[in-house]
Amino acid sequence: MSAPRRFLPSIASLRALEALDRLGSATAVAEELDLTQSAVSRQLQTLEAQIGVPLILRERKRMRLTPAAAAYAGEVRDALQQIAQASIKLTLNPKGGTLNLAILPTFGMRWLVPRLAQFAKLYPEITINMSTRLKPFSFAAEPFDAAIHFGRGDWQGAEALQLKEEYVIPVCAPQLLQDVQIAKPSDLLQFPLLHIETRPDAWREWFERQNGGATHLPALPSGTLYDQFSTITQAAIHGLGVALLPDYLVEQDLAAGRLKAAYGGPTQSLGAYYLVWPREKSNHGALEVFRDWLATQAEGEDALPR
Image (cartoon, one colour):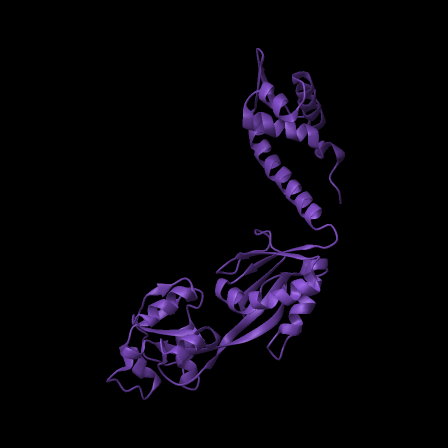
């Protein structure tokens, strides 16, 4: 259902209102918009008449906005910027589409970005804009068409495509294990455990799996908390404790001897990496193309959207 016509003013009158709020005088508005002052005044009068609300306080030869109009102008400014950005995108990419994608920084850089050259070669008409987000967010509050995130594929109001299962391994600096025998998982509790903010239950889940699902475990010691894998990896390399990290992330450090497996081998996490998108955008053209291509790159057995 479209809004009544009276609530859809002309772009010209909205630009005049926004400029008056920003510049403070009709003379400055007329100069910026390349209009006469009388033309600016007519635009504002037309806007007032159309909306039916007083917008301008006229004091001698000066005009200023009412408090309500100033608040309205702020929202209009955001809308005009959005229209301008959409027009720029269309101008730069008239034949294709744009996909605004949120990504996890480490997984995005290590797994997704190396594959994007192939996508760009196959679909040069589609532009992908990427921004990093460490935690799940609301699609209603963020201007994203899709996101690549870690979880269980149950994002509310969204559909998901599984990309890659995650296997984690406890690692630490080699010197931490000198003259120490690690015979069982609980032996790791003698070291500080390093925690990643986006996986607050990772260590507990790992210990449960090592103990056959037993939930009666010794209390886990508190440890330092990190918000990104890049920093927690460096903390482990420099001997600050034992970190539970994805195997794909530490394979080079293990091979180079900067890190050493503290106990056992990789253990499957309870989550996986997913492409997630809001249901209402399922038929978004650029998203459909990207999703179908990404399905060919997926490494999990359950790669179908659900």
